[in-house]
Length: 615
Image (cartoon, rainbow, N blue to C red):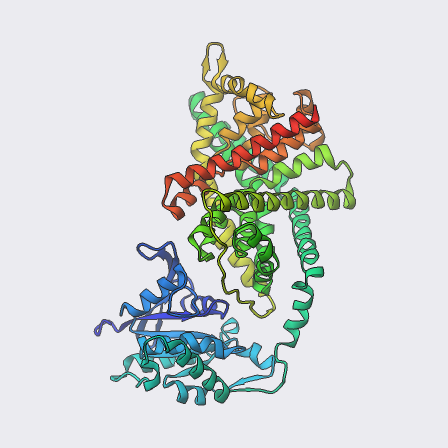
């Protein structure tokens, strides 16, 4: 603490799914930043807020169930609590299940005497007939207790007032003697104390406070209904994404390419050389324009829908439903959540693997996340489906396209399970670990906040990284397409070199070359193919599906080529952004190279098998 400036550091702690991040965002607003603790692959957030002349730095530590660390997140939380860096702590508890949350709260009170218990979600508790007696809870724990509903900002002003009073007090509250017990009996002692406090401080007016949740779980978690409902939900999400992205993507493409033409005219009007216009506009700008127009609309639709399911409390149910499948493949059920994240962006999916406690299972999840098609690959898959497999128009055509896209994703899930099984029996052999999975209560999603969080935290963030990778790619593609060696361009020479391999796997050299040059961003694979087929020096804007199909068939494409193209789109090396993320998460060049070689080998072998069988 700095006595002159009146600055205090407060640790914001709590179990997962208690609304801790909502409290953090409501207090700090935009005065926050995200970083990593040294030596940890665990992100944290710090934010500042001022209250009546005092400045508080709020450290949002990872969600944890106990300070007896069982995961990287809990270890990071424990280290921050016991380090002495915090002047005080706010422990956020779920008002609908206070007993489970008190186990962590009592441990933190022992380590940080100046602690406030923030009983959040009090509005949900009241709807379930649960009343928390704040005064009695304060008496039994020996620390101040504040009832809040962070979503509506209820009680947050009182929380700030209590923090000010506690931080400026000369003496810390006296911790009850029972909390200082150590040794092997500590778990039982604190658990019994938490149960005793909950019995005295919480009144439940109904015998089944979680009746509504249980009813929904009978649908979402039963073997006969859970999987079909899951497939139906994601089928709807994929259909909305596929159909809804078409029109904005087309408008955005036309607008950005028209702007590029205007910039070209502007450069020529000031006497710029042709090569400079080629590098800046035909190379860098056109690749950027393509990435933005193809990637932004699907992400702007998928991420909000994904976040709504997350906010509703459905995603952990998916992990529950698929846990047996992943256990049979030697992996962890939590991997299913990281796979869903991979549908938006594989780099995000790789980062999400931090939730898996076992290092072996976490590595399996990292190496196989690429088998889930990200938003960068959706447009290619959707276009091929529309041109070669589903020719109907209108509602039924869209419905069949959505079903075909869902089928492709299911194939990706099956490949993930198969490759996970192979890895668990070879280079990453081991026994599947057990873990605790908390099923949060169902909540009404906050649509406004979901849109902001999904668009800013996910869509714009992912798009920014893709654009950063696309800039050098645009320059490289333009140079390869415009530098001639021996009467042909570098691009043509590379295509010719890979043509024998392409023919072997049911493709051609142009397609193999396009995948290689599309390493920075999956969105530009098809444009590179079109550019090579048309012998152009820059990316070509895709026309309607009829003219595109005509161009592809004129260059030897058949239904077999389309099947192999879908397989290769699904099973090939991760993009540059994902590879960098894998290197950062694993800290190993070996595993990063394996993450590149593994899916590529699988894709080539599958395509080769299709090509041989088709013949």
